[in-house]
Length: 594
Image (cartoon, rainbow, N blue to C red; front, top):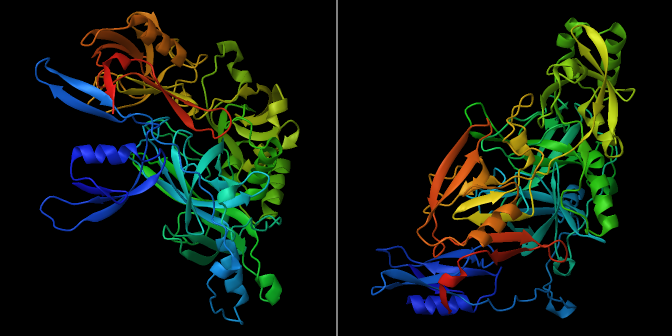
């Protein structure tokens, strides 16, 4: 039972409604609840959400035999959050140790750069389920002109979510401004606590066996650290395809440490030398971001592990671009790639496949620079289907090809892929080792598919959106079904709500091809059909769908716009970049506003 909300008693449903009506959207308030049979209340913090979910009251009409739907009016304006101005007379003096250890001073300084995050995903979309936990640790990488915090995609997986950041024991909302191999989140700089800072960067590349510290935060904002060393760089860096298909980290060089740190996010810093002065020990320079990676094992169970990400190579260039654009660009900027997922293989194995002595020595020499093991790259899989005629198959990359050069540059590490500048190229020259022979291939670059989107629709309980990149990885790359929308946005089913008309009929991980005989190739097509058909309640409509293997099915779903209206959510392209909700159908069933 809910006994109080935001400090106000809710002994009846009418009292509860009146209290909820007076709370602004996005506000986080305390709920006091009591279990049946218990005499004491318990508190929980709840985020008020009027932007992803409708607030409605249903009352039974015994004469008509239906339920009357009434909805809450617009919530009151949001409270303007402003960081309180702290005056000297308001501060509490705390006795400090005049002889603070340099190492402790460095840790406290770094603490101000680490951020906890908790994300709430309202619906299952883009392969991410709403029931999963999305939380982790991020790193402040910019404060001006755009405040930016770096997170991994396991913590902040998509755009359509609510983000709560904890900086220096203060909760503030955040907004996604970049999605790629990692996520960048921005926030209102007016809410910035005073002791938050950007750390100093270690521009010297890490090497295997370097002594380092892994420093992270617990969910309670406690600092943890572990002294260890770099175990490997760029070894076994690939992840596995997931079901349902979701974003995964690929073609990114990993940094692995010898011993687990006990935290799921933080930073990797170089351990100060024994001869370092006290002044040098007071600053810990960040060499890598310590991030959580998610994937699935062969049994389909979710698996998680941690690894380092080179900030100088992967993050700083993106941060510089966003600051230059003042965060006005798209969350996922258009880019081009080779459409290939790479893996690695030991040099000992590759040497038996016809590798020349000259190239063998070059791999060994390159690995010595980081004290690592030479691991040539191989073609693992294609990221999206590519139509190739049989006579041209030998001129395209094949699975298990050994990649030797790209555009005349020897490729010895996966990190070199980030230096190719593919956005400005229509094609590249690639030398591969295949069947004991070196072949020169001309590989066209192709537009990369986005991993999320900015438009989501609830269609009688089915949550649908445009096709995302992870789905196309699992479509037959050589002979895809012509029914699968590869060249059009498509209408992909991300999830289905329990109790809805779509449950057990419309299937997640399928595409909708037709609705009542009308061809559907985009979200706008689907909305257009809903607006033009104007089905009656209780009417059954036919939906044709197709799975990743090209197998089609036709199902019937019952129209129920009283309880399951068609809703649309779009992300604002500028300003706050929040999501706005639009009702596509079912307004005629709203018989009043509370």
